[in-house]
Structures are given as structure tokens and as C-alpha cells.
Amino acid sequence: MAKVHPLSISNTGDDASTTSTSSCSNNKYVTSKRETFTIWMKSLVMQGKGCTAFDENGEIVYRIDNYDAKHSNEVYLMDLRGKLLFTVCEKKMCFFPSWKGYKNNGANKALFQVRKNCRSILGKKGFAYKVTMRSDGSCYRLEGLSGKSSEFRITDSNGGVVAETKRKQSSSGVVLGDDVFTLVVEPHVDHSFIMALVTVYGLIRHQI
Image (cartoon, helix red, strand yellow):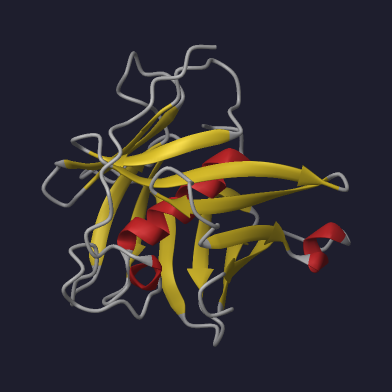
């Protein structure tokens, strides 16, 4: 498989601390208002596997282009211009997969790790994954909603919702396919980090 690597731009202030939802307000990926995105689990490159995120104005803000027809165990989250934001890798240990997220090209230690929640492993209803941040040990939770595979939420260690997805509806109220959904990110939350977790979700469902 021939991999096409995105443009890697060195950090200029986007260090590990900006990945937390408590990031400072001068981070362009953090705003003081609730942000809504449309997520299409397709790449615009020949509509292959990947992910494309549009903002409220219909502009592309994030993209993942997987040039392999099969499920990939390493993908690159980029902005519209191809700047590499996160590298997300799938790891398999003791039959249970985990996913690690790296800032930029993955040259440094992982910024976060996602593992299946023990309740899910034991066969409890729905799915749940634990997200652990390397920088401060804080945790988030990625969990499904009402058994609907295309809908999920991300909560912090206190149970507060930081982001949530719902099936996308057209202006006339028609529910679109399960590969198109609306992502709502709460204020003061780094939405590039949330998109990295959406990427993990896409890998879990083998959509990327």
C-alpha cells in the first residue's frame, strides 16, 4: 500500500497542554461558544474511506484521507490545507485493541490512549471506552447512546458532556445515513482533540 503523508508543520505553541479541554483561549481550536460540525465518514478523495468535517458555514475544517481500501491501523487527522494535527494508531495487546493519539507525526509520546471500558468487555449493554490523557492523567469517556451505533457522547471525569453526536437531519427533517452525523462541541473545549476522538470512533467501527 502506498501511503500519502500529510504536510507536517512543527509545533508553534500547540503543545500537549492545548490538547486538554482546559486549553487556553488563544488556541484557535478552542472557542467560547458551542460549535457544531457536520461529520461525513468519507474522504473527499474519490469518496474513499476517511472522514471530512464541515463547520456551520459548510467549510471543510478537518479531513482524513485513507488511501487503502481496507481498514487502516494508522491515520492522520489534518486541517483543510493538509497540516497534520494528530496521528492516531491502533494497537492490539492481549486480544483487546487500544488506540493512541500523537500530536503531529507521532515522533513524541502519545498524548492520549483509548481503551475499552471493562463493563463493555464483560458484555454490558452498549459500548464505552476510557480516554486517558498522558499529560495529567485526566480521563474522558467515549460512550454509545441508546444502542445506536452512530450516536455517541464524550464526557469528562465528572460526567459532564463535552461533545455529542446525533444522526444528521436535512432541513426538511429527513434523517440521513449513519455515516453522516452532527457533532456538537461545548464551549472552551479543544475541538481538534474531539475530532481525534471521533477518528478513534471511526477506527472502532472500521469506517476509516
